[in-house]
Amino acid sequence: MEAYEHFHLIGQALWRWFVTRCYDSLLVGLLWFAGLWYLHVRWALLWGILACLLHFIPHFGTVIALIGPAVASVIINGWTQFLYVLVLYAAIVLVDSLLIQPWLMKGVARVPFWISLIAPIALGLVFSFWGVLLAAPLLAVVYAYRAHFTKQRHAGAHVEKK
Image 1: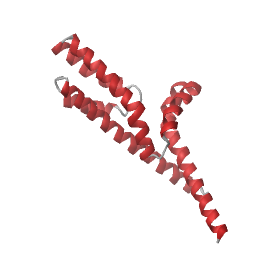
Image 2: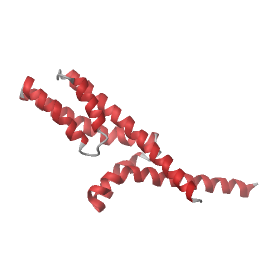
Image 3: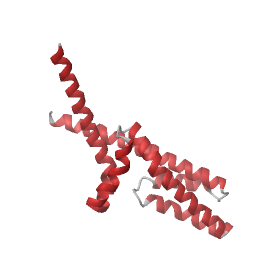
């Protein structure tokens, strides 16, 4: 395999991972908007757009996105709504990390559902913060190579049969 083929394969894998990340951010922003609109938090659309944009910052973006609606809900509507916003945040984080991200990684980046759940935990235990941060793009590249070599192996098997 030539060097340009490696770069092309890695570039395609990282592009699919980036598209996955964009879809994920859009869905998280929509969930934030819908949840905050349902809770009658002021500026729900603004908080949803900010959550969408901040979701590109791994792990810290969702926490930063929580600050605005949490402060707005405490100031305007009190502690009860603040607790509802915290519950909404927890629900969005759980749904995103356990359902949306693995589902998108399977569909767009072609990474199996189960490995996209396990790999960040395993790499986080071995490499701490950087393992968790780089788990998804590494999985996209590894599975792109796996698909490429499987395709080559099957093409070679068909040639030998003829």
